[in-house]
Image (cartoon, rainbow, N blue to C red; front, top):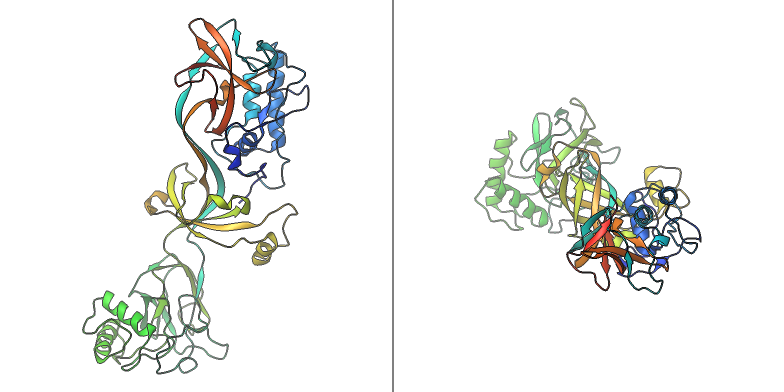
Length: 475
């Protein structure tokens, strides 16, 4: 994910009545709330330098229209742009640009009135009006994400019989095994036989289905957390026995109790299972007779070919559900926790609802570079936090298998507040802001305090500000 620094805690910027920051004397545009302004700058997705240039251009246009800017006017001071592409903050509007545009309606010097904060009257009605409305504002952060099938794991061929495990005992032990498969073999220990069948890339394999075949004998997938590391036979017991029995039961085999004891009933069910697989009906299960994984798997890449010996890496695979991953700047980590909702914006503009399902440990740029084999991080890069989002309704993702997406996170909410378009704000000669209230007898400028900026609107409060009040906005 890429981002720009923002002044202070992003949540603090949502506080109503945040103190304005001052621009140097003579600069175009009015004072800008510092915190909200920096949030707004993030929203535009542009560098702070571009922002100030835009504000200056807008101010120049206002000056051309005959509006004088007071010598003591203040304006925005955005954060210094970083080398990385800016974090986009959706719905938070750049105050500097908007207020400069508002200068076209009423420049600082054109307000008249008093600098002590009292309301002032305007001689004519504004060219266009809108209503103050009561609503809920939600500020959001938009970050870069990647849609895919999550992390890949490698399925290793099982070790040759007799090189690992025991024939009895109750300790199931997991050993040093490859994800979703049996123990990784030593160079001198390779499985026997010849590979006779392999799945295609992109194939989804579920419980009981064949992962690969050796000597025309199917090796099926079973669900569980412990790979088979020893021969299971009547008299053995442990977690691996329970995994076997759970799978046999789910596949429809009966005549045994699902527990941690391998009984003669279990052996009978195993023989039935082996018959259906076209294998010798031994009633016992050896390492390599089945692949054990947490659930259904999707083949990413087959790493061997039929006719080869079953040794080393056979294939890479992943979960079957598409997920979105984000490398989140750690300064925004309080925006995410397990269960947090998010909007996933796809390349075609449609949005799917996502949910945080995993939050990792922050990684430093040096660690990320080492993991990726890069030459090293940029000097101004900060640690990032790996975050995974799951989309419950996978149909919403359409046919996308891998894509760059936008992830929209909720940054703050203000309920039941009075708001106006940001363009309704007018700079006051003594500092601060007003709105041009329109009534039957003319208009007056009412001083306002500013709160949250979001979705092109701003929270306002002050004497005379009420739901339904007409206020001036630019044409």
